Image (tube, rainbow over all chains, first blue to last red; front, side):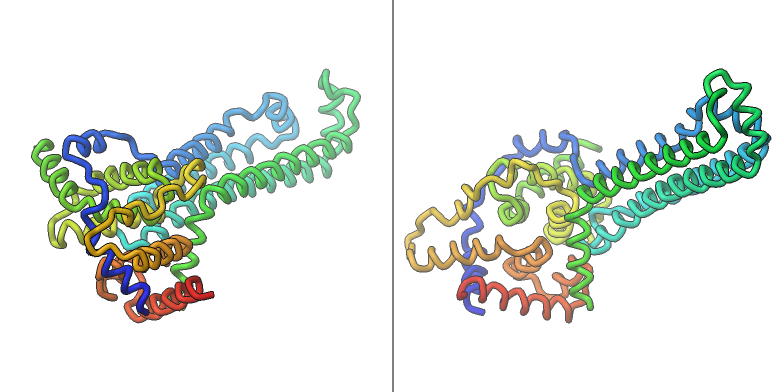
Length: 210
Length: 164
């Protein structure tokens, strides 16, 4: 095509018309901090992992009391241990994937590695939300089948003494659904915005190969 | 040691900075963003420099890092979406053979290229830089055949933009 080739000729002929930084101007640039996407993703991912891991330390005392009263302590302890193993595996995978991100890769490979790293964190979040959901339903189901025990426990509690067991379970489930729904919305917004351009370009590159 | 490395890097960057400027020109719309992207590319180049072993030419290595930064790593500033005040500044200097018609054609072509997507722009850029299809394919991570096919499609696309 002639037009692009005209541009090509001119493009090369006019190199000297671009601005030119001197060495003195270039040196300070080396010291500046990067604000790259990978850096952002890294920090956000670390923050997420810390948040989700520390969340387990903040189970309210009242919840713990109920769990203990209902005889669920052992199973929760086992789940906690399992959970730390899973967290550790995720952190390892995240580290491994993050190491693979190299700016000297081809454009496609770089994008793939970034998306893979993100995927690890995404699965970590899915795992946490899923686990929270399953635990919530399982616990409340257990409460439901052991209503008498729960009833007795509620009676002895100052705050919940007038609450019927069914209402207690109902509130638990509604509260849980709202929290989980909010989390899903929050995540789709944050990552939708952050990764939109990257995903679009990666798709574009993949389309070339079809 | 670090000083020698720094010096070697800065002098090579100074010498080849046109490559970075050209990429900035294609991927940004005003001089603030241009400088911003230039800065980010410099940081990425510098970070990757210790691993540059010199198997390839410095400039070849630069294309990859700079394009990766422009396409993937750089987060566009919201303010950069304002106007295209800066379009084609480099074409305004009159040479002895200044031909307003060629000039106009160039401007149009340039604006057309700017409307392309990030990946298409990268292909056009490497093509303008006289890279062969093998190099284009390697830089982008696609096959040579597909790079060629895609380039032909982009040329068609540009033709339609220019002659609606």
